[in-house]
Length: 104
Image 1 (spheres, rainbow, N blue to C red):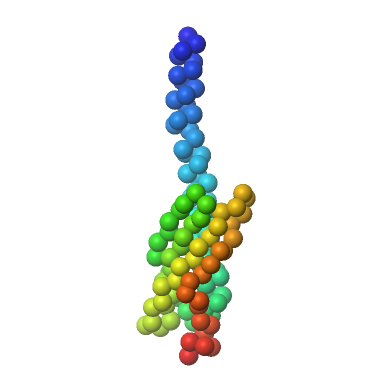
Image 2: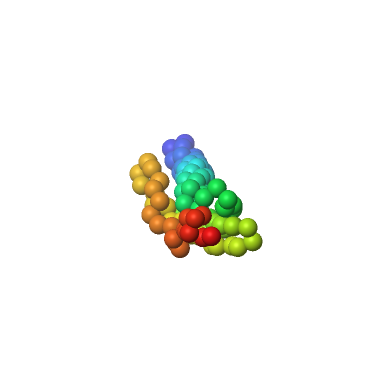
């Protein structure tokens, strides 16, 4: 009986814990996309369109690749977000986004 109980607890830990960790990854990924998109849009100006290209989630960082469209011109922008204990912060945005007035 004791072996059965220990086996059941071990199986539960293996099945439940990855789901909990991935739930945090999903929430962090969504928040990183949101803050990167908002920052790039604010830097680019109102006439620009920011679209998600891809996201890579790592244990300590999230990399968000965005497509910045100004009319027919495309600029690929990479936003690196660091994962702290309870918060996400933008570590870098490359290349530097030109403001709308400079782009004209």
